[in-house]
Image 1 (cartoon, rainbow over the protein chains, first blue to last red):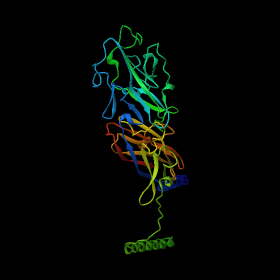
Image 2 (cartoon, rainbow over the protein chains, first blue to last red; image 1 turned 120 degrees about the vertical axis):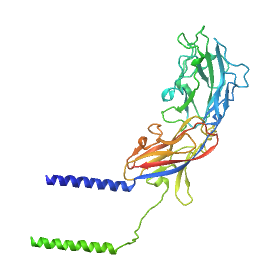
Image 3 (cartoon, rainbow over the protein chains, first blue to last red; image 1 turned 90 degrees about the vertical axis):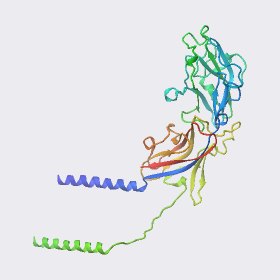
Image 4 (tube, each protein chain N blue to C red; image 1 turned 30 degrees about the vertical axis):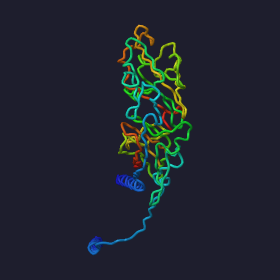
Length: 214
Length: 179
């Protein structure tokens, strides 16, 4: 009994001192390092959001704002027609100014977990893109994977939302408010109130889920 | 039995001589050699190697005036415009950016450590992350990366902006390794 006690005592003592020695070797390091970061307006950032291509987008205070409400002085109208489908082409341009190919996705800022790859999927807003400035029928554009679209439009393909370094794409918006035609289907909303207040633009490395501009 | 008592007396004598000793000995100063070396970040116990990875000059080492080279980071890097058609001026507002593989962080000590970063400055957040595993900003020890002696990870830099004024900022980030 006695012997046993001794062994326990000795054992824990030895372990204790070994741990203490180990910790003494290198217990903590704190190194302050410089990071020079430039903040740029949206049009010149790594993910460049260029509002200069239309009067329906404007860079205000460094960030791009989409304006379909007459607030831009370049517009003559004050807003959308009621019970009508209204399309705006070449509203903004998105350019990859990083060094790797990125995959551009829309995101709903109000959704949980960043809402990447989601915008309201049951209308009334449709967001589509083309590789260059576009003129032609709306159905000639490709809807983002997150966006609803009329059945006669091309189907979305997330792989084509990849943008190489130095490349860009043009973004188009359609608001399907015509409840008589219901281009987005009978279950879709034609209510302007269902247009989100914000759209997130999310750019990520195409091969992993970890990087934006590596 | 008697002998044992005597021994006790002797030990009493030792005790008193010790007392005298400590009373008479009020201070000493013994110089002993202590070898400390300050080395470059890339060779330190907490190795921060900003030379062997990273692109566009976003990460590098700079010389301190009193010797030693330390890691430094620049966003955008001086060569960020070398890819045709690109000329980024910086990160955008109200954005989160992840820049992968800016440095290798390695535990060159003898114990396992947890590596994380602390930031206090003009931006909403700046933090390091492990760009080989996931993009969780390592903002506290509880979410830090545990490194056994010899282990390393590729450090990325997470930057979150809000309403900052577009311009150049000189920020500082604490990279911490703790047992």
